[in-house]
Structure formats: C-alpha cells, structure tokens
Amino acid sequence: MTKSEYQELEKFRSEVADSFREHRDLLRNSYRDLDLRMTSVEERFDRLEAD
Image (cartoon, rainbow, N blue to C red; front, side, top):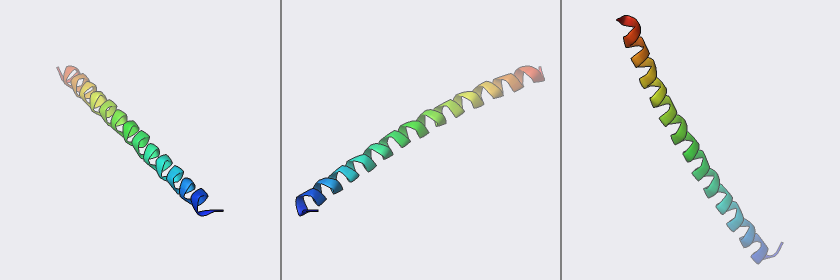
C-alpha cells in the first residue's frame, strides 16, 4: 500500500467514524425525547387513575 493510499484509507475511516457518531447521537436524542414523552403520558395516566 502506498503512502497516498494509506492516507486516503485513513481519511475514509475518519469520515465513517464521524458519520457513525453523528447517527448514534441522533438516535440517542430521538429515544431520549420519546422516553420523556412516554414518562409524561404515564404520569398523566397515573394521576387520572388516582382520581
């Protein structure tokens, strides 16, 4: 493998790692938001049951 091929491969690996982190963070945020919404619904349901 030549030096330029190695550099190109390292650049590609770096781009893939960055993309993976971005997508992982998007998924985490989406699920966190969903969890907060469900918690709110559950709390509202519990209050209605208590009445």
